[in-house]
Image (cartoon, one colour):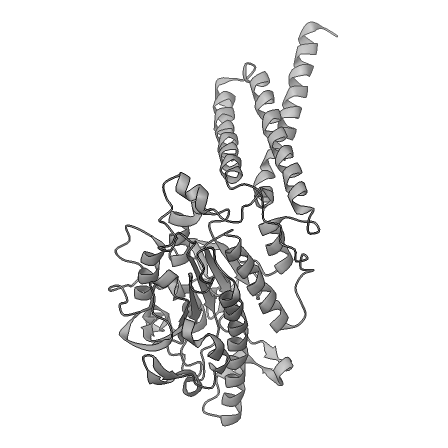
Length: 466
């Protein structure tokens, strides 16, 4: 073999080695969730001088979540009797009795961008698409979707660096990013609550097992930490391998290839930085519960498992921002477990039929039972500052349609649970003057420490008196 041929062979081998390294490295983002996690990120936040973000006055983590229900509610069973602290829960909200002191029912919040206007039919897509964005979504079933950044993602962009995951997106529905789902509107609007940008929805995860493994890693309790440490060592080995190979071949590259390599190595260094950032949070929590097996057959079990995942994420300070789409707006799910064989959406267009209205009210009550169980668990979870997880949270529960029969979008059914670390006044029914939902979002974002946001969506001011 001639010297020139041998040199060429060595170069080709080195390039193949490097490409294998590239392939391995490209898998790293998928393994991001397997990096070590801490029980609390507060100490790390203090070290970087940003502890006032997403924390209470006591320094405990402050959380924010948005829970979405579809198809409106039966109004007569929803709104409480009385006003202020002297209020009585109506039929739908009876399951909340044990946590009534931590619940604020809000009236007067509207989503005018969900109304038909010149766009005609498609209220379900507009309802969910505008709920957390406060904008009128573009009517299209193609790839040119357009909404707006959602309030959860705006908050995550400022406080997400305090935790292992900037935000958590959950659903008990399918995951669809394209197709025509509602009168010429893309499925992206109905199956995604979170929007990182006006054209980029953040797909939620429907499988509780995958949520758990993302948060804590795979394996049995007691094994997860060792698995994660081994994975971290492997990641470091891959990075070292790629950087070494890059140095070996760099002298053999042309100017254009050198530029491409420099761009690639920039991404390598970014991944190194992300690994370093993850390491500063310390070891992962190792919950004693077993990893969920997957999606349960019963809808109620599915919802509760996802609520449990959200509870764990908040308890371990894995994130402080979350969204949970219980079902997409327009969902026609039947509820045989509570004796309702007809679809929810079908029943919501009851046209005043008493039997259909009673069935919708039972579905509203079913969803409220699921919320109540979650809030009770949050109230039982004690915090490092002596309060409870619910006290140090702001949980918005509601939907973008008020009356499903009329597809109305004013005076939406909205509950704000939790005390926001002492900055909210729960335990009452608050009738706000008619105003955009975005006003409420600005107010709770302020409490989370989000800065520099004067307007959001169609906001007109900040909601006061909450």
